[in-house]
Image (cartoon, rainbow, N blue to C red; front, side, top):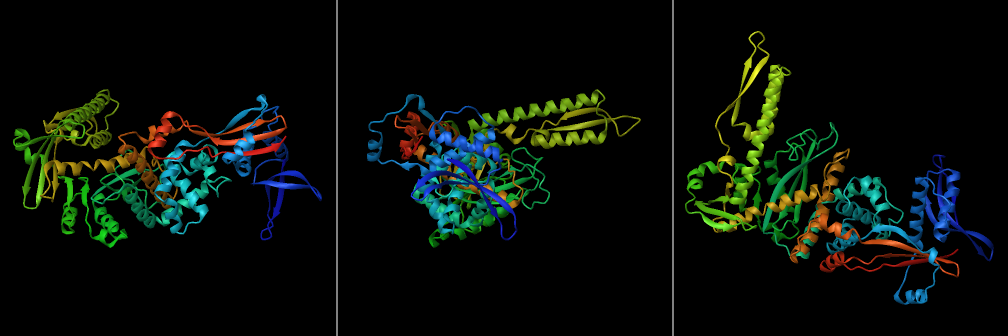
Length: 615
């Protein structure tokens, strides 16, 4: 058994190239012949390295002892070719054939080895929900070929199981994951370029994929479009991106104003499952997106009845402009929003006296006080939350402390004579005010100039204006506005609090699914990166929802940790008759992993394959 090199000369260009095959010599009726076992493809190796690689693979397959270790390059190539050999020539064992073959198993103890471990636990779970959501059928209906379906599966599940760049995903698939053993078309591995191309194709069919996936989610989880939760977030891009139409500088929600941004608009339902997504430029005005997104969702509905139904809409205050509220009312939507303007001060007397407030409880059994006021078709709920008050007091005091520390530092370096220039001092003051917003609004500065040089500042004095921000004066107080008059205070508060579902989705996308930072060099790839993350989130949310139905609340990180011990491996041994046997199978899951598989109804079997060669 050895590796031979084949030469190809292009008839069109005349360029000579080489590819390699794993072959063995066999005796036939016509004499010895070479039998091709594997087409390896192109390798960047010398003739001497080819001979070493041939010997290494022959020894690995036959279980012969090794005398030395070679370079990492040769060792990695040998492992990769051996793994392809086991996948190609391993044959599934039925229960009967297994008993016949190994009923009286005899092995040479010193020849027993186990190795070539690949993760399989999280992969089995992801594949189960890939099938449950009928992703393969969706992609085939979009015109994807079988190989493209498998590549799309890797692009999406890679974001779920091991998020990273396309280069990282290709390395994870080729070297660490057992997913290649469940793919028919990708046994030879994948490249980052193939993932880039499949991302482009997925994005090309975005509307159709998103619509069909939403239908499958509704059937699987018995979902009803009762409430739409709409919000936007942005994430940053590593690099300058001067020529990009999508990556623009703006106000970063992750405090990365130094980087170009892209904006993701996301609509989820009352249970947190994605309904619609869209990517905008990083400097996109949030309020202007609402009508466009809601109209597109309505037009994407396949069922004419669904187009006529108007779910209730929950908005962040940044999107709830007067124009948007007027459009929602005019188009027949019921909406819920914390008022954009500082409505708490309009109800100062009510919040101070707390008269006619009814006591209730939030989701964590904390005290909640609500008061409902109605004016024609407009309802307002005055809310005081003890838990929110405690949190806001801490936030305000911490921000004020940090603000004062920075101001003291500025005053100190001016006093010591290191910073006297008026322009530089004004820039520093502006940056401090920008960072601390409303806290800085409660203070002012008085700059004392040098008598001889008016552009030099000899002393900086801070003046306390004795102004309190609304959060400092009324911590835990806010006002919810809605055009629904028939709901109770508790129901209206409950609908607005569902906005936490879209915020949870953004957290998952940015942490569990690794959407940040983005490294792509063109806008199409940026959009494909974010859309694949949204598709992966559909699978993640399905898993979390199924566990929550059984009163099991685990993060995706915790689930992957539990399943990380579940592996596939190869057992190798030689029998007294001189045959080398390779058995590839999935291990027995540990108790915690077994419990998860049972709850989620994931079937776990050995998937055993075997191969025998004469040593």
